[in-house]
Image 1 (tube, rainbow over the protein chains, first blue to last red):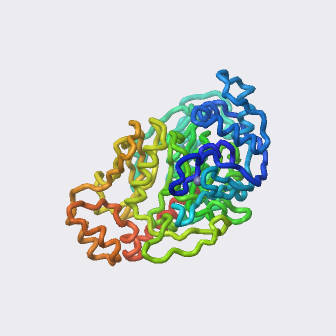
Image 2 (cartoon, each protein chain N blue to C red; image 1 turned 180 degrees about the vertical axis):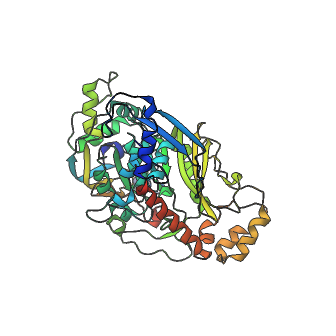
Image 3 (cartoon, rainbow over the protein chains, first blue to last red; image 1 turned 90 degrees about the horizontal axis):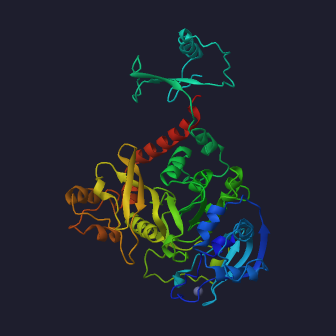
Amino acid sequence: MRLVTHNMLQCHVKGCNSNNFPLQLSDVEIEIQETDFNPKFLRNMLSKLEWNALVKTALEINITTLPNVLPNDLDEEFLKMLHRVLLETHIKQGQMICPNCNHTYPIKDGIPNMLLSETET
Amino acid sequence: MVSAFGSTCSSDYQIRIIDSFAYLGFKGDIDLKNPEVTFGVLEDYGLDSVPPLEPFMIYFGRLIASGNRDLIQTFNLKKRKYIGNTSMDAELSLIMANQALAVPGKLIYDPFVGTGSFLFTCAQFGSFTMGSDIDGRQIRGQTDRSVKSNVEQYHLQGKVLDTLVFDICHHPWRDNLWFDAIVTDPPYGVRAGAKTLGRKNPTKRPLTIDGTHEGKDYYPPTKPYEMSEVLSDLLEFAARFLVLGGRLVYWLPTLVDEYSSSDLPEHSSMRLVSNSEQNFGQWSRRLVTMEKFKDNIIGERTNIHNVRGVDNLSSVYKKNDVNSNEAETTNTKEKKKPGHYLFREKYFSSKSDKKQIWTRNKDQNRDDDTDNTT
Ligand SMILES: [Zn+2]
C-alpha cells in the first residue's frame, strides 16, 4: 500500500465517526519502488489529500522531508520529493490502528485488509 | 499491405489487389516490411455470416495513423498469467477504458476488482488505478499468479496503485471526490460469489469470530447481494465519490424479453452517456456509461423501479422456484420489477442452455482475440 492510498482511508467501524483518521501505522515494513514521475497526477491528488495527516503519517515511518505547511509554489523539486513519499513508498507489512477505537487493520504483502467482522458493521 | 478483419484472404488474392493498382505508375521500390507510405484498400462485405460475392463498397486511401487494436493481443486472456472465471476479455476491457475516458493523470477505481482486468487496461492508457474486493483471495491469487503478477507482466507497477480488501457496502474511503472514473463488472451472481457482508438469516446466532478476521485467510460470512441492491449502492457511490464530469462504466445483465430502457437505474446526479447491448440470445448484458453532471445531494437515492409491465414479469416469477424470502420482495404488485430484477435466480433456475450460450460466446470472444489475421 502506498502512502497516497493511506491518506484516502479512515476507520469505518460502526459508530466510529470522529478522530478516525489518519490510521496510525504500526510494525511496518517499508519498501521503496521507483516509478515514473507524473506532476499532473500529483497536483490533482494534492488538492484532495489531508496534508497534516500525511506529514504525521510520514513521521511515523521516519520520513522527515515533508514541510509542516504545504508550500504555495509547487516546483518540480518539491513534487519529485512528494512523488517519492506518496507513490514510491510502499508499506509491505504491518498494521493500521484507529486513533479513536483502536481497531487494527492488517496489511499483508502490500494489501490492506479493511474488512470488518459482523459486529463491527 | 493487405489484411482482413473477421475473415481471411489468400496471398493470391492479396497480390491481385496490389497488382490492380499497377496503373498508378508509382516509381518507388516496393518494401512490404518497412514501407515509407502505406496505401489501404477496404472492401466492405457487411456483417452477415455468409458474405455477398461482391463487396458493398470499396474504399481506398493512404494510412496516416493506426488504432490500438494490437492492445487486444497484449491483454489477451490466453496470455495473461493470472485469470479467474470473472476476468473480462481484453477487447471489452479496453473499450471500457475508452468509455471511462482513461487518460494520463486520472484516478480510476474498480470496487469489484476480482482479478483486476480493468486496472490494467485503464492504466495502459496512462490513468492511475485502484481496486477493491470483498474477496481478498482473488486479489492475492497464488504465490506467483496474482493481480500483482499481472501488473508486473504488463509493466504497470507505476500506474496500478493499490488493491484493497473490503466490501463496497462498508467501505473505508474518506468523503471526497477522489475518482475520475469508476469502471467495474459488478457481481450479479452470474459471476462467482455475489456477496455482501452479513448473514442471509439475521435471526441465526452470529458465529464466534475470535479476532481471526485480522488473519489472512479470514473470509467473512456473506449473504446474497441482490442485483437491485448492487446497482443502488454502485450509483450512490459514484454520485458521491466521482468528480464532476467523472464517469461510471459498468455491465448490466438483462433478460432480453423483459428489458426496456426504463429499467436502467437512475440517479439525480448521473446522466446516461451510452447503453450498448451484447446479445447472448435470451439474455444479454449491457455496457452502461453514465456521467456525473450535478453535485451529489446527501441522501439522494438511486431510482431503480418503474411502474410499467407488471403482468409480463410476475408470470416469470411464478414459473421460477424463488424462495420465500425473495418471493416476499417480488409480491409488490404495484411496481414493475426491471428486467434485471432477481436476475441471478432466473439465470440459475433456467435450464443450462443459457449458461452454455454464455460460455460459448465467451470462448468465441477469446478466440476472436487471436484469429484476426493481419
Ligand atoms: Zn475506529
